[in-house]
Image 1 (spheres, helix red, strand yellow):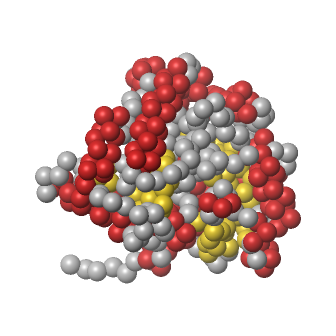
Image 2: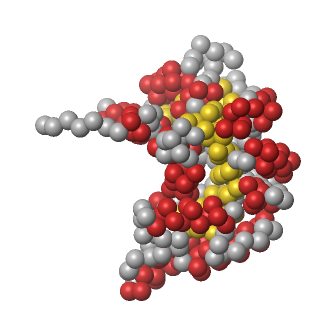
Image 3: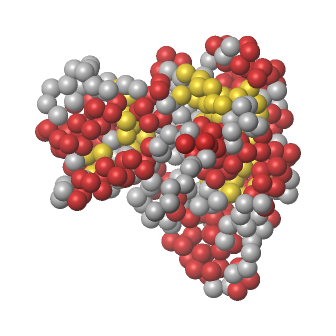
Length: 393
C-alpha cells in the first residue's frame, strides 16, 4: 500500500478532543460496560415538534431540492436579524450583516482563512473551544494563548498581553457564556474588548452559541450590544443548543459587513449553502413558540442541581454556573486532568472530559455536561459516590 505524506497543516493539528473520547467510549462498550457519557455537549432532548414538522413540509417542496445560496436565504437571514433586534436590541441589515453557516463551528473554523496569512498571530483563550486554534492552524496562523483563570472569572486580562504580540495579532476569539468553563461576561468586559481591538486593529470573533442556555433569570448579552463592536468584530450563533438541533448544522455569523461578506465569499468557493428546508425549519425555531426552550431550561436546571449537590457531597464546593449546560470543576489532589478522567471511567463507567483537552491552562480541571437523561445523570453520580472513595482537595 502506498503511503502519502500529510501536509504540515494537518500534522500540526492536535487530536480532536471528542474523537479520543468517542474511542474510549467505544472500547468500554466492547467490554460490556454500561457507559454513561457526561462528556460531549450534545443535547439529548428532541428537536421541538413544530420545527421537525416544518422540515418535513419544506423537504417535500421541489423548489428546495436545488443548490441553495452560499450565504443563505434572505428570509432566514431576516429571521436572524429579527431575533437580534428582539433579543438584544441590536439592528442588523440581513443583506449585508448576516451570513448563514452550516453550524457555527463551520464559520468559526473558516474565518481564519479569511484574515490570517502564514505566520499571522491570533489570540486564543486557554482553556477554550479547540476549533478556535484548529481553524487558525489550518489557515497557517500562529495561535497565541491567552491564559484565563478562575481568579479573573475565566476572562482574558488584555493588560497582560505583551505589546509586541498585541500589535502583531490579527484576530481574537472570545466566548461568553463560555465553553468549557461556564463563565459569563458583562457589557463592561465587552467594552474593554472593543477598546483593545480598536487600539491594536484586531478582528474580534465572539462565539455566542450558548446565549439562550441560562438560569435563574440571567440573560446573557451580545457582544454587538456594545457601541463600536460592529466596527471591530462579528458574532457567531446557531440554533443547535436552544432548539436541540446540533445535527441539523445551521447557524450564522453577524456583524461587521466586510467580514460577513468575506466569510460568505469564502463559503461560495467551498460549499453550496445549507439545504433550504433546514433553513425554513430554523426560521420556525427562531420565530415560533419558545415554550420548548423554556421547558429545556427547566430540565437543565434540575440536572444542574443534581450535579452541584452530588459534587458537594463528594467534597467539591463550587458556584453553580449561570449559563451553558456545563460544570467546570478542579480535579482532586494527586490527579491530573487525564488521570482523573481515566480513573473515573475505569472505576465507574462514567465519562467526563479532561480539562487539558481545551488547552494547557485547562490542566487540573474536568468538565461535566448536563446533556444526558436525568435518571442516567442520577445513576452516574450514584456510581461516582460509591466507587471513587475518599477524595482530597
